[in-house]
Amino acid sequence: MLLSKLRGGTETIQFGAFHLALFNRAAWIPGLVHACGLSTAVGYPLDTVKVRIQTEGHYNGIWHCIQETYRTERVLGFYKGVSASVFTVSLISSVSFGTYRNFLCNICKLRYGTADAKPSGLDVSLAGGAAGAVRVVLMTPSEVAKVRMQTQRNPHPSVTSSQPLSKPKYRGSLHCLKVIAKEEGFGGLYKGCSALLCRDCSSSAIYFLTYSSLCDWLTPAGKNKPGFLVVLLSGGSAGVLAWGLATPLDVLKSRMQVDESGQHKYKGLIHCARESIRQEGLKVLFKGLGLNCIRAFPVNMVVFVTYEAVLRFTDHFANKK
Image (cartoon, rainbow, N blue to C red):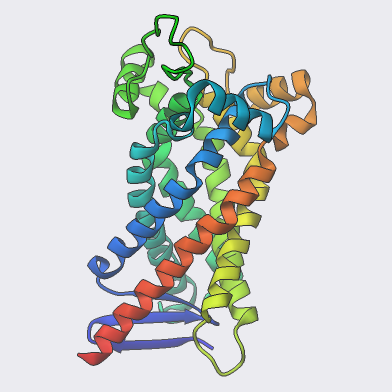
């Protein structure tokens, strides 16, 4: 049942057990920024391993990649480019949630005449896809820099103490973006954009639809808000399903973005898919699938638990007024 309430400048729309808050942006953005930043930092080492497995063919598996990375680069090897990634993902995820909310309201207005109408599964999916598209426009340059930083080899001084260390091409994420823009032009900052667009539009649609559907299904009758365990399970499951289905496009995205100037290994998304399959077989599209799913569950539990907590705190604070 759709419930709409306006109290102290706060409006909340509920889709079954899943509710979306339409309140002052200042109330929810900080909490979501911190949630996404924390979840990104926690899952970053696994993301580095995933990117290396997807873009390099000499690893025998996850554990081999972890061993080799630690042997040559120590712990810092798993955190290359993490600072910029945490900052950009945090802000962009906040924008993504806000975009989803606003698109869903506008879709309901167009289809049913009012933003208070109960959205269908198709409405939720369309709003999620729109949120994914907005993410791509904002995050592609930072994704390119992240992948380049993660695949750059910087041996730890303790490993190469008897040999002079070569100067790394990229000294940090901002320097990486500067070098890419200089050597490859503006287009270099948006390498892999087509794969990222396909990945994020489809995965965001699945992501939000799965979360709202699971919350609605798992919440007992008579309750209008999902419980803590329901949010944990729904958020984690939504992340696993979305990332599991997005893995093939994630592989292609990483391979296109690591293709530096002078290499021109891939001419586009279709060419990258065709060449990758021709050289390594269909299984190449599922490299990093396990890591994506393992990382997605805890990361998205953190995101949705914090998101729900911020919504409820804001609602409680508004009620007191």
